[in-house]
Amino acid sequence: MGKDDVGVEVLIAGDGKNYPKAGSTVSIHYDAFLPNGIQFDSTRKRNAFKYLLFCEQVIQGLDEGVSQLSLGERAMISIPSSKAYGSKGFPCLVPKDSDLRFDVELIAFTNDD
Image 1 (tube, rainbow, N blue to C red):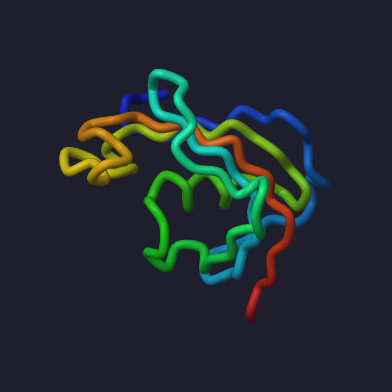
Image 2 (image 1 turned 135 degrees about the vertical axis):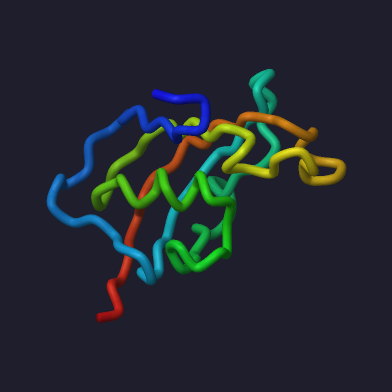
């Protein structure tokens, strides 16, 4: 894995058959962590997060990681800074040049063909 590659470590296997594709509306739960292990965001105690896959609604690394998950799968997604918030960071939340880790569960998705 190169320094700009997104890593996916499966924690709980999904169905292995159904994968979202670009333009799918995905519904996920996640916990987001800084390099030091501090959690900076989570959906686990609120509603699942829904967005359009590969439509520039989230950081690039999250799109790349979620697209590799099958329905019901839970994984730890490691995202290099270059595919997260980069040299700008996210003010008051994510320091510049931070690699991030997301514990993500793909709950549902719809492919709008």
